[in-house]
Image (cartoon, rainbow, N blue to C red; front, side):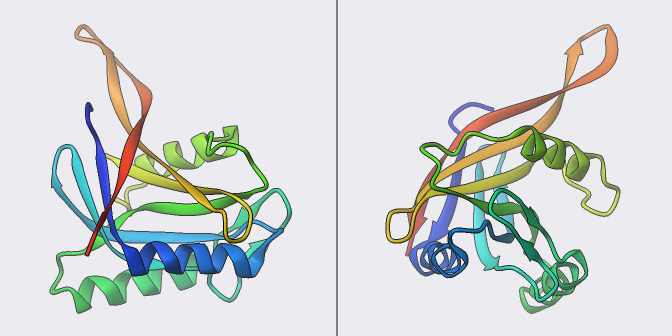
Amino acid sequence: MQGLAAWISSPSLEKLRGDADRFYPNETGGVLTGYWADDANVVITAVMGAGPAAVHKRYSYKHDHVWEAAQIGLEYERSGRTNVYVGDWHTHPDALSGRLSGTDKRALRRVLLSRDARLSKVLMLVLFGRPQEWRADVRVAEFRRVSAWRWRRSLSIESARLQRYD
């Protein structure tokens, strides 16, 4: 995965920043839907914030999985069955970087192993900073074989550029 890019509209990015402002100083998050245009470019077509049963704490965020699954289904139908779940987003309030925590990495592994997600690659977008100053860091995770003669897989996480489209 070289030269990865995640494409997002300005209104979608502003929605994420607005949600981050609203829940600050606690973490918040949600899901991203869209499609992979090719192996290196993912287009985020819709962003969903936290569901009503989500739990927001200073250093953690728990998804409302039932609500999110319903929203993903609605977006899938609304898009003519083209836009699917491509990843998650969440905040790291007051952080100086969007570095992934161990919890974040375990979440990526769980999604890739999930039969429901049916993904070979998954996105994680982290907004870090504080209100009116949020910056974004995007990572793409996938399993890679350790070697040609061994079946063991290793989780590979690489940075992606966040590109705006309008």
